[in-house]
Length: 100
Image (cartoon, rainbow, N blue to C red):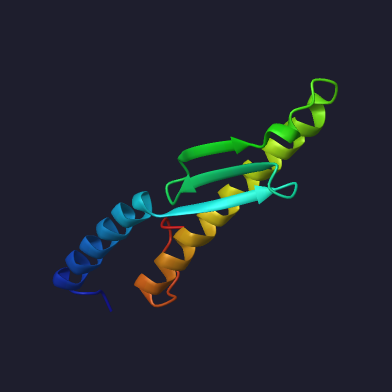
């Protein structure tokens, strides 16, 4: 049974609103005891990167690179989780191909 056009329009409007809201919501990931913090939107756009001064060691750049990478990956995971949670709430848990 096909959903009626009005239901589809309502779902599209709610999806558009959800996408807009995700752009305004942020997630934060902090690694290394606060050495590196990344803030990212629900659209996976980076808002800020903070590196604690004590994390900067010219003799050990590799550790800082690893921390930055870990913070970005954690923030991206949290952003995807946020989007998935919002979509699940919108669709009532239905899996809709192509949405996530």
